[in-house]
Amino acid sequence: MDHHEKMRLRAAAFRATRLYPGPVGELVSRELLTWEEFGYRLGGEQLVMRLVDHVLKTPIPQPAAEAEVDAA
Image (cartoon, rainbow, N blue to C red; front, side):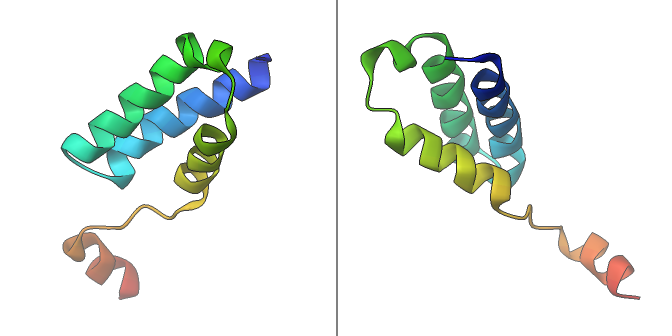
């Protein structure tokens, strides 16, 4: 796995906790970090890289109070 792919995995792992607050985001984050560390050796990275793309492209929802301030 090259440096660029590792950086994308780490960025997605960090962003997942903000995109999906709580246990789901933590699970996705840990899975991506574990994949970077060990999983890539197992092959079949298509699903993981699709998850990375999804996490990096999906806008992070703003809390209602911030959304109202931005709209004004």
